Structure formats: structure tokens, C-alpha cells
Length: 173
Image (cartoon, rainbow, N blue to C red):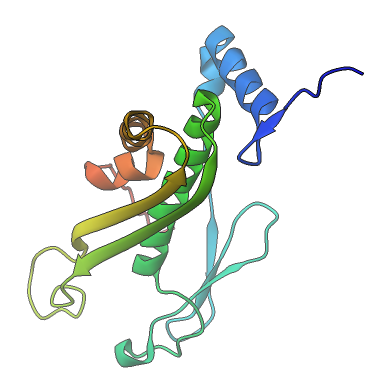
């Protein structure tokens, strides 16, 4: 009987990840990608983002901010995007390192002062700070988990986007 060959770990297709990394090493221009979303306003504070061929992602404000609370608001979606990006990073990097993840929970919290958003003062309309708590259950050593954590935090696209100034050009067409 032939030995069983594991092609996935942590529900990540190891072959696909390795194949992409190899292709990018051979053809570096393949790494330059563009992502996009189209957002349609639906009245009030309701809108929805269309991304690729997926069902639309709804957005709204909570009742206390004048919305109808039919979906997460944009700043909550930013926090979710950071948590989701980190989860991808943990899954990909743990898989590459041969680390099995038993459970992973990422809590993301941001502090936001509404004065600027509401036009009551000038200043930062965005988050003043974001805190993330990662709960990672694995049988790997604490040293291996710390190395994994360091790699994930150093390579997160959304983490990098949020932690540095990114040019944003908003044009009225």
C-alpha cells in the first residue's frame, strides 16, 4: 500500500501556494496585482460593495449614528478586513512552516472619535489606534508560534496599509 501524501494542512492547498511562490520567483511581474470593488449607494447610509462575482457586501450605520443597522459600517469592515487578512497570514505561514492550527480567533478593536466625522472639529476622522488580540491554539512550540506571529505581522497587506500613509486619490467623475 502506498503511503498517504498530505497535500493540505490547515485546509490550505500547499501545492497552490508553493506553485504561486515559484511562479513569482521566476516571473516577478506576476506579483503586481490590482484589486477592486464597486460600491452602490442604496439610500440613507446604506450601500453595498460588489467584489468579483461574490454576493454584495452590505454596509450601513448603526441606529445611534442615523442608520438602519442593516449591515456593518465601513469602519467595522476595516477592522474585519484586518482580522481576515491576519487569519490568511496565519493559515498560509503556518502551513508553509508545517504548523497545525487547532483554533484561531482574532479580536480587532479600534478607537474612533466622531468629532471630525460629524463636522464638529478638524482632525483625524479615522481610527486613533487599533488593537489586535490573537488567540492561536496549536501544538507547536511557543518559539515556533512567536516566529509565526512575527512573520504574519510583518507581511500582512492590510496591516501594512493601515500602518502607513497610502496615497488615496478620490476623483469626482
